[in-house]
Length: 565
Image (cartoon, rainbow, N blue to C red; front, side):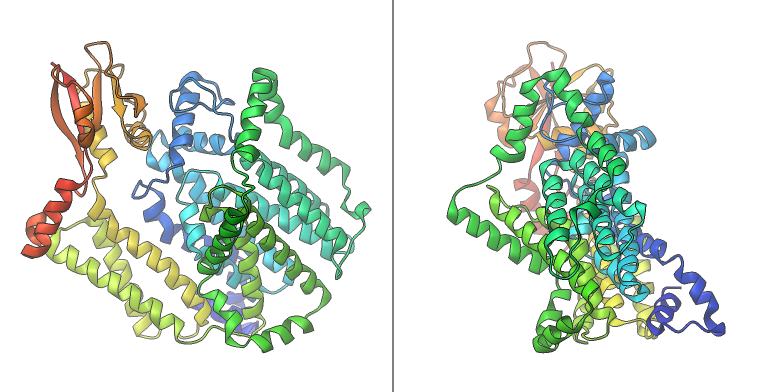
């Protein structure tokens, strides 16, 4: 179906012989997100990787549900309100818990779906702005294959939600700019998208909306009047949405709430050191370059031809590309202004940058070189070979078997020419998603059972009921993961690095083996709770590798459980 879809789109010829392809194209905005969901599922739906910030949200929502307080997030101690981020991400995560229960799947499911929805939005936005399904399809595939998008959709933190709502807002502002009589929905998208983004991450959303409005009024290609930006009802409703949770929190907690929020949004993050600003700005530009590989190579294939092409495009397209450039500049400036740079700060401009690359490719004025696709296919073959060897000679795993079958089928289809009619750009995007899929499928049997899952199972063996407290030391992330892996059944008390034993004689303790010397453990029976790479059989490898694996396991992080005698 993908071959027919892409070929029909690339040819742009709809005759009586391919009317079925024409009908298929109506559902393209659904097909690409489905590809994304499939390829990203292994990394998104379990804790192969756990981002450090996820604990702040998974913990907070469990405490909110326990207290039946659905508007006040709480910190890791379960008592102190967490004022640093607005409410939307917590509510989305809570929705996952309500539907699927407290679990890795519940914590990430709707963030994963938000990633797929982002891709559908990017397709529809690109098609709306350029009136070209080819550009729209390529845009969707470039966004879907971006590593930053795939990783962000695999985390229960605000980033993927922020970029979804900001992209809707950008689409709205661009729709207002290029249409003489904009449809009403563009105003709702522009302002309400920014409002929900503000309720997701705070100040950055307001900056993007403000810069977008200024650009519309000042750009030299498609300048609009302030009056054209006005839409009283969408603006008023959006302001109410943007400020509602903040007003509630201020009413309930007073100035303390606002001080903490503003300190996190501005005071604690913004740097005034010149060298740090320059360094972070360079990191931002470099990371944007790296996350745009291989599409960024379009700039270097024929620079003079590219410049002449951009000069020759119509006024609407120049105005859209200028808007994209302004967002990229804003992203780099925001990345430069913080004390510590994070690559995920670049995410809001990825959809627009992807649309720019798709515009160049879709116009058939500049294309990727043929050498790029074989490089990615070779990487995929290498991962497939390692997976096959592990499956046949090291350890059988049904998840890995499923992955190897899928990967083998894809390579066979490619070898026998099933994809010859698909453009190399779409094949490159699919290969990038395929690599993400293959790497996570390979890692699954190597890392499972995950230490947090091991620890949750082990603790349940020694607790009498769900009310028994378990004091967990040394890592807030491990405590948060165990809460989720236990489906919220364990009464975990996060102690972080406060190495003080509980006063009662019934509570269990869990701690890193390396921290054992910090306690008087004479009153406890000690049991192994978890170890790194516990699922890898060290006796199935050559001796030199066996020795390395045994050494790694011995030196790797272990958690111990203390049960009162």
